[in-house]
Picture 1 (cartoon, rainbow over the protein chains, first blue to last red):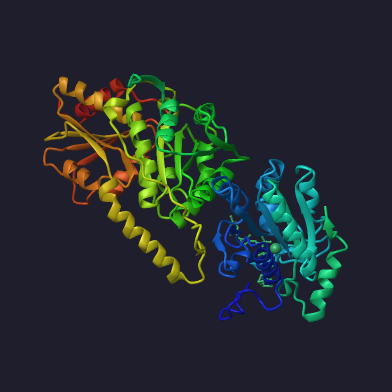
Picture 2 (picture 1 turned 180 degrees about the horizontal axis):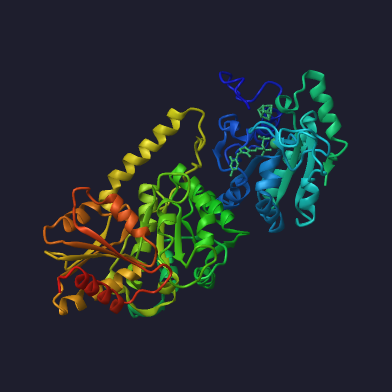
Length: 227
Length: 351
Ligand SMILES: Cc1ncc(C[n+]2csc(CCOP(=O)(O)OP(=O)(O)O)c2C)c(N)n1
Ligand code: SF4
Ligand SMILES: [Mg+2]
């Protein structure tokens, strides 16, 4: 859980990947001159801690429900840039049905998935992205199955013009490039989703260099690039 | 001018009311008996989204109203259960979430026409405190009027609003005279997430006290507006002996039963709540508290969902005895109510 930083302006744990994704998002929006049109919907998970992180319109939704909420918002305000910010659990477990159908219908929203391979907010349970063999609170002997590859799964149902990609929080340049591409895709009227491989030192129980190595290791299973 | 009298089904009446309310968008997932609202809306050339399930419809509706669109959804039974997810967010954030709940028999997939078993779910579903308006129309013209009112009240007071009806009324075809209903002004929607300033709008809090303040504010507002919103029909209640309490289409049958009972010399009256949330409790207390009232007979197509609300809200000092006529998921006709009430009198030795 994340209560080690209550008094700092950022509520995320030290070394967390979430603020890196959010900063990349904020900077890219600013650069594109879209901060005013941007609307950031937050899933429940550590994503919820982003409520006042960026100087853009932001609201909470429910766990797994950020994509349908942003689909509805976009219907109401077509000139807005609708951003759904979620963890891997919110995206690929409880919210998968809606996410798949948003991709299938090519809804012009952008979904940003922060993949830390666990349910971080609730204390490190198995997520749909947990690696085979990875030990978690709910899989003390190691997870028995392979993880869901989100963007690859979406590709099966998405429009060819949908932008689907995976990057990692230790490559900010690529992250920003992908965010820009995803927003442009939304502006062109198509669905976009970026998965960010992200640090969770708290639940990975890693420190410094170990955290970085852990992330690099994830790239062997979760392929980086446009999908 | 077009003829103000029209021959329409309940679903058509609802669609007409939603259009006249200025609604611009419907989110829905097909389910009998609410599907005809979705198709009727689509056939009117209006904007819509058929979602992957009712959960998505509910949250997309939350998103649309956050964006400033007057929008709604329609569902029933198992769909009403799923809709409580989005309704809970709407309750937490005070969103003008407008929904038709077309009751069908339950539990489970049950039946599809006649029932009043979604009363508690519609009034108190979710993990909140039931801060939503629930209207229970008894005929086509009320269905129109209270749908218009639901949109207005939801956007004016910023609470979710549910039009609680059933498969029977939605399929009923009848004449509705719009001239008699008169003109109703619309409340304009507004962008709840502003376009020219920035909000950070939470629905999950770090401290208990923060949430408590939100709930308290909502409670105070709800109680304040309850005076304006709470509505009922009181029929032949003055010095009545037997007070029938019924809502929706059962309320319509009960009203006829009052006339029949009076013909038999039984001094019956009817309290028919039109809003189940908030309940017109002052009116109820006044009527039920009359010395003449010996029995309060709650009649419903459920095993006591309306009775639960009435008993909970009625002033504790009111001492009339309660009796219950309960046929869960069955149609209740006038004659059956008359027989039931007459039978009660036989049992208690009054006839
Ligand atoms: C309907 C519902 N079920 C369960 C929860 C509890 N819950 C909160 S966050 C969470 C998991 C979050 O995991 P993820 O989406 O991966 O986000 P992370 O915290 O890892 O960033 C769960 C299960 C909830 N809030 N709502
Ligand atoms: S994702 Fe992990 S590191 Fe980041 S705030 Fe949550 S628990 Fe802390
Ligand atoms: Mg996670």
